[in-house]
Image 1 (cartoon, helix red, strand yellow):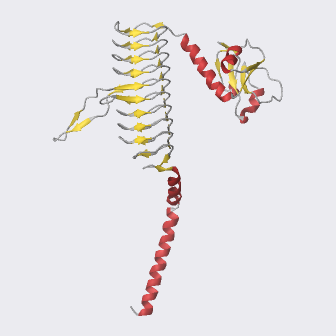
Image 2 (spheres, one colour):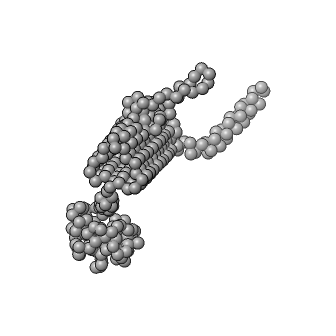
Image 3 (cartoon, helix red, strand yellow):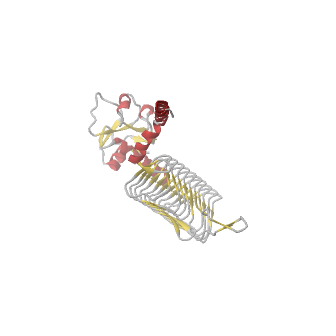
Length: 351
């Protein structure tokens, strides 16, 4: 439970009403009920400000009420940003209550863990693994030999981290993600078969990284596959061996990045985009949905299409492509006219 006073202090907000009012969670403004917190930021939901049953409501400082309301009010600079912060506060409170080791968890005596860790049932912590303070390992997680996990990181049920990989502090790894599986490395042989190339590197993940469910990040052939600090990965993403992703880059679902490609900082990849191997993408690049990147991309570019091209060029090309049926009809008319003119000319000359 969190009090309005605690929430207001966390958000640097001001209270109108009872500061001792407590809430156990958040709710949409139209579904608010006693014991929950809601927020108002979108004008289309304004009517619910006056009907919500929530105990606490976040409002922008400049919003003027048209009538008195019953919830305790917390005024903040930006209610939308405020609710995002409060949801994090609820998560922190929930996580803080999880400590200790549940039954059937297997923890090697040759591993090390910091203070206030939680290890769920049927989790496996191999020898040489090192867990920082306040790490939360949910049931059925596998932590391989010599893995390092930083302070305050949360790893949800079913995630697997292979041997030698490094995960930074304040990270979140969601269920069924696999970090450090072998990269897709096979050498063709003279007889048509493929020989596996040993993948002896690891994966290194920076601080404040969030990785969605069912993500695969392959270990490097040699060296490290690197995920920079602040990176956010959606569900269902494939990151191949020896890829490097710069700080604060965000990647949406069903994106794939092939081996040894380098992605800069503060990039945005929309869903179902793809990158071929061994290319370089600069900083502050935006890759649109379903775009296939096959060549290097300079800083600050926005890329669309397959194969990709700069947004301005793609849009000009798309205008032409969209009108191809009409252009084809016009060309056919012109061809007929040319044929008719040539026929007429030939008749006049007796040819």
